[in-house]
Amino acid sequence: MFKVFDRRFKGWIAAITLALSTLFLMPLVAQAANEVLVDSSNSIFNVVTVYKVDKSEQNKTLTDLLKLNQENLPQVSGFLNTSILNGQDESEIIALSQWKDLSSFQSYAKQGQRNINNITPQVFACQVQHTETRNTAPSFSEKDTIMFSQFKMKPGKKQSELTAIVTQEMPGVLQMVSGLQWAAVCPSTDKSTIALLARWNSRGDFKSLGQKPGFEKESNYWETYANNEHGLYDVVKIIR
Image (cartoon, rainbow, N blue to C red; front, side, top):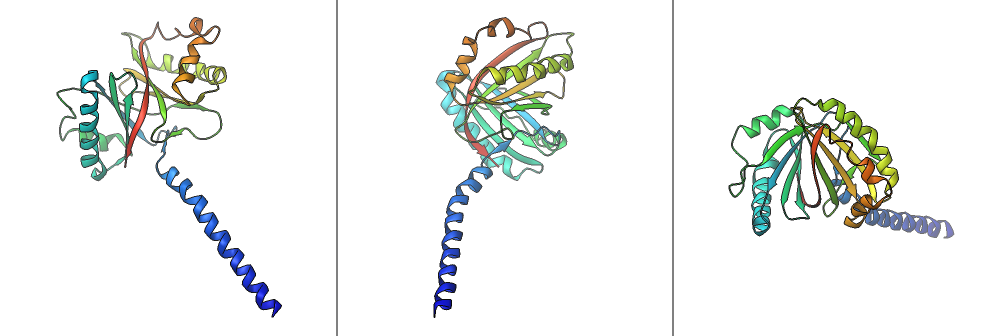
């Protein structure tokens, strides 16, 4: 009798353990599926599409862009995902997409313009060359805060030289500000631009960088090579 009870008791424990593990693992699986990894293996091509918008048109442009991407991209061969980033200063919206190879995106691009509300976007492809992170592999999810920065190369300046300088600066900035989780440098394939992505805990953490002693002295390292544009963006939607 006790052996039967012991077997049943162990069975109940196993069933409860399985049920609890399923409950706890399901959110983690869902979260992982919703993450975008910032790949530094050069096996994935990133395409950046930047829409300059007026504040009065931002919401409409965002809605139209979401609709266009959701209706068209998931069925395209070679497409992996696109993340819609809404500028916190209400002047830009960025579609950051990942593709298996550059030719897949180029084939898609030939099918037509990606103009929204008569806005002709800036488009460039890049590959992540280096990442700097605290603990885990660089990634982001919906509702995260992302800094996106563009270094637009000046005439006669070599992209490779500035890429090396930016890469060299990254560990120091990560050490300086605890709210910075990771950063990734992504030189464009046409040599015109360097994109820098960074994951911040909050807008306050981003602002605190400029208040650090010595930051202003070190922050103009790119001026000889490029003009810089940067801002904070909310990850509104990830489409797969």
